[in-house]
Image 1 (cartoon, rainbow, N blue to C red):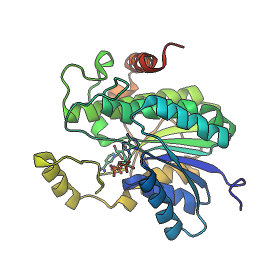
Image 2 (cartoon, rainbow, N blue to C red):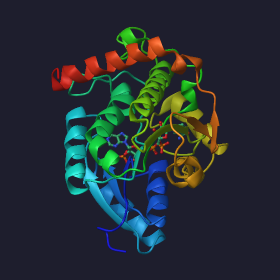
Image 3 (cartoon, protein in one colour):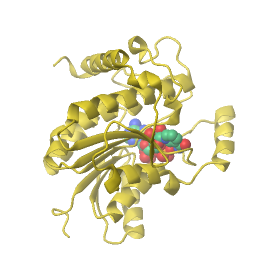
Length: 285
Ligand SMILES: NC(=O)c1ccc[n+]([C@@H]2O[C@H](COP(=O)([O-])OP(=O)(O)OC[C@H]3O[C@@H](n4cnc5c(N)ncnc54)[C@H](OP(=O)(O)O)[C@@H]3O)[C@@H](O)[C@H]2O)c1
């Protein structure tokens, strides 16, 4: 089947970790996969690695630093122009940081990469996902959202930033926006779910010192990157998940999320605060 006849998937963070295996699994399932990475060499080597492991795989690479919301919107628009029908979007890229960082656009970096970027990219691909229906959005969350608290008035944690709090709150915000999007898309043929991949031995924690040492020990008990890709791939591909929307999935099973994620007043406040942060970058409207 030629590239133009294949259904199209888009994967962020496809240059390493779980994302590389997700991209490979989608290519093995016969989709043309658009790999988004921020580094040309890593993106090209991921494409080559997929081609070696899955002969006949069809991929293309696109470059964007997903800590930039403008770059994210630009790459999303370019992909939608090339691929007006998209079957699968996996927002997998994520980051963990031991210190508070602010992006060139003035956004707190963990919130930007883990929550704001998926929001912007999915918006940019909205028409293409609707045109490609039945289609699926799979957002890679984390069980760190399970007990996280969220303050809609302090999403960037200008007060009280902590590494665990920032990561957990960003993943809870991602979950809440996924559920809100699933409701908005109901009846469109586009489903949206959030998955926890398990504890996976990847390069997610890039810190040295005590945090790096703790991560190296945790990795001894973690699943492999390939195993970590299993639940995102299942939700992206299995017929069982073709019509399920607004679910939180662990080990291929829908589970109860943090009750805060189901609080509609809180969800509206998070949505409105998210839009406010985006407006600071893009302007209102
Ligand atoms: N590992 C775990 O135990 C675990 C548990 C729960 C959830 N998760 C989630 O799983 C997802 C994948 O993480 P992973 O464990 O596979 O981590 P990883 O090995 O660090 O991979 C992260 C991917 O995201 C990309 N990325 C990060 N920041 C980016 C940016 N600013 N612009 C473009 N790409 C960027 C990385 O690109 P580069 O190659 O350029 O660095 C890499 O491809 C994340 O959302 C993470 O939060 C992981």
